Image 1 (cartoon, rainbow, N blue to C red):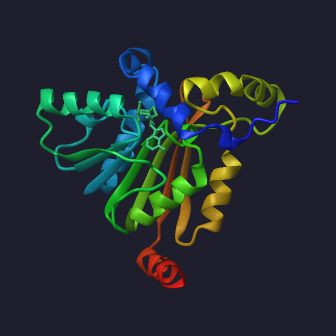
Image 2: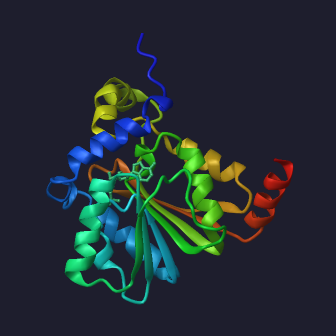
Length: 232
Ligand SMILES: C[S@@+](CC[C@H](N)C(=O)[O-])C[C@H]1O[C@@H](n2cnc3c(N)ncnc32)[C@H](O)[C@@H]1O
């Protein structure tokens, strides 16, 4: 029996996959994910301020944000990020503060650094999605939002079976097919201060969603980090 688990999507596989995707990424995934990106940018701009794009990739979204937003981008793939750096230089995007090779699961920003954390088509590519969402919540300011666009796996039925069957091939391409919405809602339910604001179906085929979580300010992540450090 195929017992492929979430852990099988390891960082080495992901970085190898995106090193291969980097030269052709915009051509293959530019137009097909355009509507989702536009929706995520519009949601992020409603909050504005300092925005972190995690899994910024080739920086395909960066030129589309308002110049009033200050943008930071991180990605685990150096070849993808080089494309983003070229784009920022070519277009003279002066509102981009910086681009760093960084793992979404271990962000090296202080607590409460950003008004918005955006991750487009990223959560299904990281080995530990819930740990990654925890990091997003940690670096988010009170009153801020996490804005995701992500593929949402089926809970049951034929699509669920097909996704399970396709998972080993998808892993080699750098993502997972199986990730139901229940995992997002469970994460929000268990994470102090975070609540689901919106879930909106997105093309292609409505298999993707815009998902927004708000930080209601009731959880002080700096206090939590202090107590973890004290306990350690
Ligand atoms: C499907 S691409 C999405 C790129 C871009 N956000 C877009 O809208 O097209 C996924 C991106 O997430 C990055 N990524 C995957 N795992 C990551 C991790 N653990 N930390 C940071 N970036 C990661 C990949 O390198 C890749 O650039």
